[in-house]
Image (cartoon, rainbow, N blue to C red; front, side, top):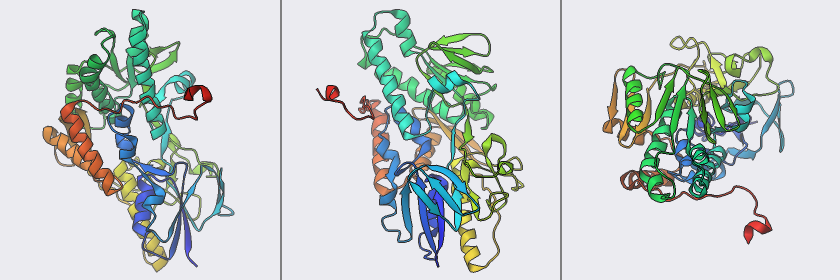
Length: 424
């Protein structure tokens, strides 16, 4: 009898686990995901800013698995895990498993601020990125028609909460697009009525990275006109005003939230198996503590057994990729009745693009910045993309757009069914 492995979540961890087991016919694998495609989160902000197409960083699961004889896809959202009966409940049916792998990732953490959660714009998936793109384009169109200076400023002001890699990369992209595109394509809008704010509660941008990276990000974004507010946090968002911890406020209709994440909730997992940030506690082999034959990978898990990372691993793509591969090896070892290998994270460094031809790269032994770092960033972000065609299209699009400063995909598309009125 083949062992049935259910993997919930088709991100980096889930995909790499599947790729490592695709030739082992002792396993039957079912991937469960709410979407029918894999996407590349590090580039989601470039979709939100109309720089690249969503299809450039997405790939259908069924096409990916079309040559994998032991892999099936089940489109659905996880509702509950039943460890006693070894089943999971989804909104599209129940499934039974021999091994269950939870790789659902994270969602935006609004730290209990209800108004921020209701009105801010997160950017964790393709749908949210496209919504943000539409929102900003619609604001520009309204600003072009509006004659009230205060309303125009409110429509154009953009506040980014969170000075990590995503916030820094997004701020740089928006600043450059405003410089090269907005002034040329929206002549009705007077220059000087817009501000781009980047806010972080910590004393430096890119806090997990080197001092060189932090200083480079700060200086480059300042030159691009970004208003950087450090040691300040968002406390509320009411009536199109962002309330800050220092008592000041910013009038804006666009608060982009990149300020934190929390692991997705998995009903049915014992409460004692949940750690800080709602992350699922796992042992050295990524087995969920207090359960049998249930594993957790990537951002959703908290592993405290790695001597090099006693407080847990950073929630990065490389951790998820390596954990997926390690679990595959261990599942094969279980089938072969061999000794399992504990997970040990190999830190390959971190990087962030700040502006055109300028990035920062931190490797384990040294750091560098500038054009070479920018080329490194492009190369590293193309390699993990699924599908040869996606890599070629994205590489060609990137170089063309960076040279011309003129992406042409600023289309306001509504992701909803058209009514008769819309069709007229």
